[in-house]
Image: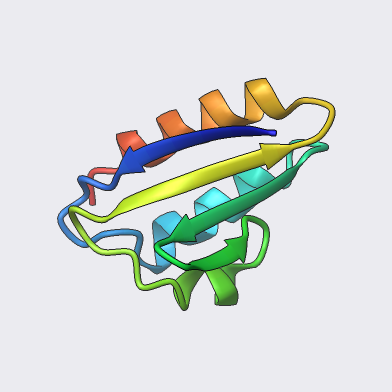
Length: 86
C-alpha cells in the first residue's frame, strides 16, 4: 500500500466539479484508491461518498492506493489534488 498526505489548497476545497474529475481519474488505475479526511474515508471512485468527506480548503487528506499500479496512481492523483485551483 502506498500512502500520501496532501493539503487541499483550492479556495472552494474539493467541491463537485473537481471531485467528479478526481473519481474519473481514479477509475484509470487498477489499484484500489481511498481518500481519507480524519477518521472518515471514501472509495476514490465514488463521487457521492467522496463529497460526504467535506474536504475544504486547508484540509489535509490522506490518499491511499493499494494494488498493481499503486505507486503511479498515488503520485499522479496526489498531483491532481494539489493542482486544483477552483
